[in-house]
Length: 363
Image (tube, rainbow, N blue to C red; front, top):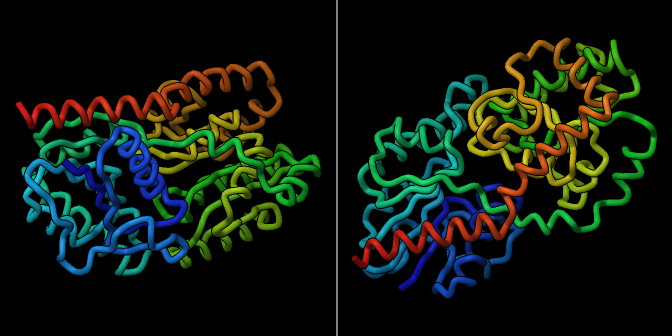
């Protein structure tokens, strides 16, 4: 019996791709014959890491085999998957709704609309679903999924974050006495970078002029939104203190986490939000807007806010930076939550779910 994974696009540094690679290792450790199959492979990844699906030529499977399909975007796999005569599991990472893409290109909007069309098409054709969060589970139920659905956090190899960070980045941004406010995530409208910039502008102008906002993430595909954000920062008079990193190396990401005073997230659509767990690992206190999967991922930790008022957010940043007791209390809560994301714990959870699914099929 094989347990293979399928994913529309396998990308370097992408949360869904990272989850796919991590699960491959788990499946191998569990003794399953396994492989990854994709339509599109990031050119920065080795050809040997997966098998390329050409057109509609799906991998050969037997009835007892299991396909694990990572669902997060538009793909012909959303329709071709149903032709495979085997047992099917969907890992649902969520799809960004088109309403967040109103000012983006037609192509980007089309991806969102087509993604949801594919999600609807697979209703009744999947045997079992694993959702990254309770938020994602409820999304599946909303779209008509009646198969068993369990919640399993994204598998994050936290030991990777113990690697040495980029020393040049630390020297440049971590040794000048500035307070560093950090957000990590691709430059995309659903992540609401403009709300982060607005809060930072008030903080920088009225509370702490020796402060810096670091927005770490690629703008690929969202260059127009990126340009608007930079114009907005210029209009607010803080562009000199806002760093748009673009796509950076893993060591540079580690460096930015290691010098951050606060992690500020204003996103309004996330299926899980891995950077929250990363911030927990680096003991960076989190301020996050109460939306989508955010409250489920934090689960009572961090500082969850229900207002985006820039003044209120800026004053909260100031309090967390200055109040050591409050800061330590927040970090303690995050440390407890981080335990739920430990590699072995999530690995065991996934292994148990998979075993139960396979055994039920044999009954």
